[in-house]
Image (cartoon, rainbow, N blue to C red; front, side, top):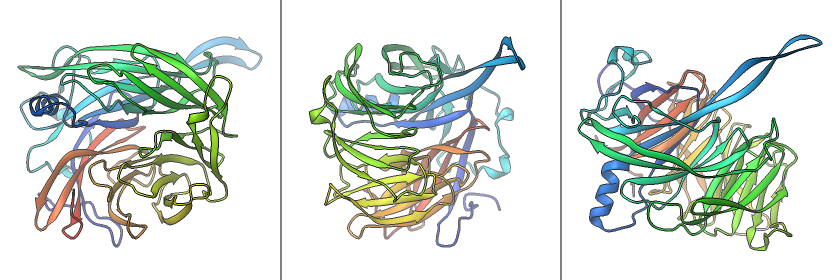
Length: 440
């Protein structure tokens, strides 16, 4: 099959998905996050934001390397270290050079059906188009979260690093004759959560609280988790990150931590111990832990990988797990929330993205099961499959909505970015939403 109507076939009841582009990342792709405008500023400022930051995708890189160590009783030992970086891509049209010959494009070209509007990924070089493409973070990245506020040119991003640190990086984009480039970048703040102990990693981070205007993070709260089972509440005040408190939360690695978008005093967490918990941070301080609101055991049949809330999510939130299910929770009784519905995904769901402009749309990066697009019916408390994307040839670890939709043939096409790990791939693809499901 060829042309625009060639589709990746999903399972029965699921719609079509089209691969629009594939591009290689420099190291293993562990996570991605789409930089979205927050709607602040006047019309001119918003247009400037869109010109520079519209559909910019940050991919976190993680590579496990070994170097020879001292000889032990069993012979040579090797010390492992986890290197990484941050790589930025633009999804769009134009004459910007990819920074490599088209003949070197990865993947089977017969499997890629170019976007009718010409949109594709372009790496954003440092200083010049085609320049160095990786922002050095000195450690592998497990999680990326953008700060909400922005100036037209600059954005700040929080990173959870394998070295045990949370750091904030500031990135400035510039438009040149050859395209958009990184005009400047710096690590503006960093905090070790593990006292630099070997083998203890920072696994997840989220950004909440008030965030100042302009090109700096301003005053914000950060929630983070480390592989020793601890959760951390941090204050990010411009150029510094200050610990507020840390507490023992889980018996195993907590891969998921997030602020409630409706009530930023609440923090959700989930871990390999299969426990989902919620905490009230108003009681947190140097001498006091947050108040535990609830702990749900026995619902997830394996570790909790991801938790998502939504400003328009009403009485619902979402969790995903290694048990290959996404669960929609009803929290009208916050002390004991219940599962409204769960849906099987065919793979452990490492990350989700709940569409910020339309709470009826959800994406899941389902590891060996590819990626899934779901419809979220908040009124009825239901999840329904929309499309399945199976073109990744390695573990799908990241997924996010791009800011483009098109109406074609009585349906709406939604554009998506996703990444996979061992094959170092970033994909752009589309799926269809039937006309009965209106996009916001």
